[in-house]
Amino acid sequence: VLIYFGYPQAHEDDARRAVSSGLRILETINRLNPQLERDWGVRLSVRLGIHTGLVIVGEMGVREAPDPMAVVGETPNISARLQSVAEPNTLFISSFTYRLVQGFFESTSRGWTTLKGITDPILVYQVLRESKAESRFDVAEASGLTLFVNRVQEKALLQMSWEEAKAGSVQVVLLHGEAGMGKSRLIWELKKNIVKEADVWIAEIKGSPYYKNSAFYPIIEKKKKILFQFDRNANSLKKLSKIESFL
Image (cartoon, rainbow, N blue to C red; front, side, top):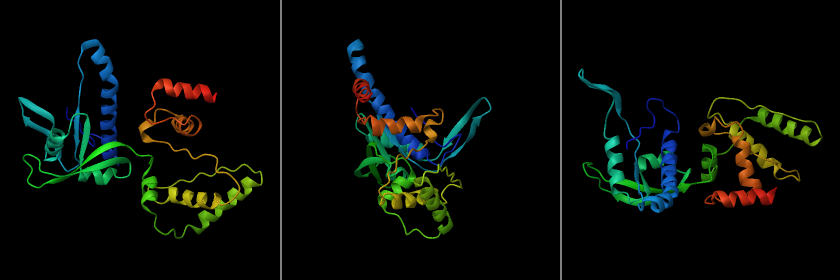
């Protein structure tokens, strides 16, 4: 199976979406196998390879046999070669993809690998699992932030709102702006000052474009992590037990 991310609709995080999908495939096969073995006496295994690169996409072929989505370039070929060298039930990615998803996943280097039909060796990584990072800012924070400058008025306004909230006045602040202009960093700076005080930072919840059809996703995730303390590998019965214990 060959799956394209970035066409016909491109997203800024297509590489992350591809790797997340790969991990979900591995998890699903792992859950499916006990039933297959019980009912049919067989087990399935899957190998996954992901590479990021430039291609030309468009309608090609002849009039009698048009191809509505032909892809020209070495990217699909490298992906297929990565898949061929991967062990069963593993996900391999190239260093080109790794640079785009680094910090969002826990990976291990598999070294330089020579792929059939590819001139230069490629540095290959095996993706193990998702990390705890939920946003690009989480990744940047883990690797170290640069010095915070300016935003004096914005910081003062947020700090004033916090002081009024402590005094008993309900405060709601909407921070809005273009992507990458520093909204998350501004909130981080406020939070850094707040944790020095005796007051408590109650909760921090984040939306996700992957769950835009679930209006309560941020609240559900916060409850799963903080209230119920779900383990990443816990099955449904264990999760249900934790919910019942909490209630």
